[in-house]
Each structure stands twice: as C-alpha cells, then as structure tokens.
Length: 94
Image (tube, rainbow, N blue to C red):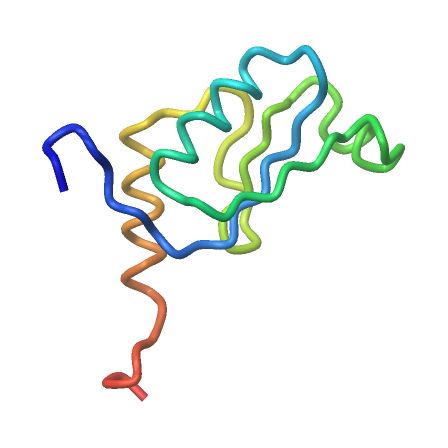
C-alpha cells in the first residue's frame, strides 16, 4: 500500500442522496476511499425517505446505523469504520 492510499474496510454502507447535491457527491468520493461496496439511495424516489431525510442529505449509514448527516468528516469516518471492523467477531472469538 502506498502512503497516500487508505485501508479498505468491510462494511455495509448506504448513502442516502439526491441529484444535484454536491455534499452527496463529496461523501460518495470520500467513502469510496475506505469502502468499495456502497449502495446509493436517491431519496427523491421514495416519499418516506424524503420525509425522513429531506434537507439532511447526505446521510451515511454504516452497518445499519446512521453515522453522518450532511458533511462527512474523513477522520471520524475512518474511526467509525475501524471501530466497526473491531466489533465484528472473528472465528477466533467464537
């Protein structure tokens, strides 16, 4: 790994977004530095999501928990992903 690359984490990440949202685009680029499998959900296609997240996008959900609303902090993102990775039981812990 070169010094500018980031470790990849195995996490279920959903980013709730909408078209034309620059913060959403920024969040996607940032999260892709750490997680390769991301699901993007455009809230404008589901009325209940518009009601839930309307002006809060992007919303980043990691392993089923909402972790960010609006701007995503790279340092906090890395900390959350590391904590999630350390909380997953391995075969040795079973």
